Length: 104
Image 1 (cartoon, rainbow, N blue to C red):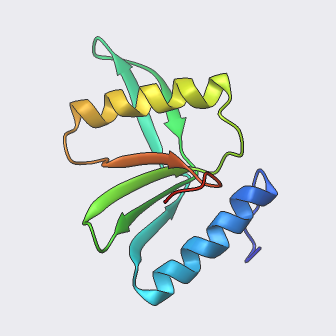
Image 2 (spheres, rainbow, N blue to C red):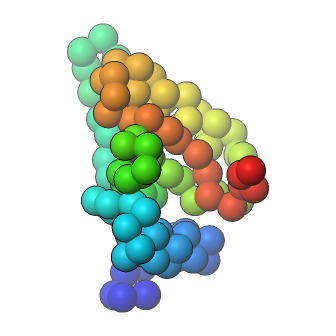
């Protein structure tokens, strides 16, 4: 899609949705596969690669999103790691959620 390869159909579909939201002005600064260094005791252990990062224009929050259909053990671990990053970098990441989940 648009010359971009995605790991899953769900991720490609979510990208299409986010592009429409960006065109409509609901989100801004859409990024694909942003990386976050995972550092323990000052040493970089690895990096976490999310599917998307964007600014929610209405709330002003930065959203980091993984487009997953199921909460796998790997997903749960990634979410914990990103929460730790968020807690250490206050305000840089406001929300992490998985696409495909029904939100009310």
